[in-house]
Length: 43
Image (cartoon, rainbow, N blue to C red; front, side, top):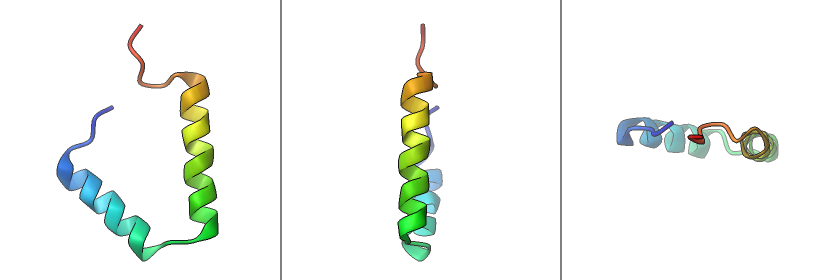
């Protein structure tokens, strides 16, 4: 799913305001899940 630029900016702003080790782990975990589920890949 492609995000619009304003959405990306909001996500970046959220990350900068809420930086933490646990948020980083959450992002890594969700990325791994997306890769293994091949979520968003056209077949």
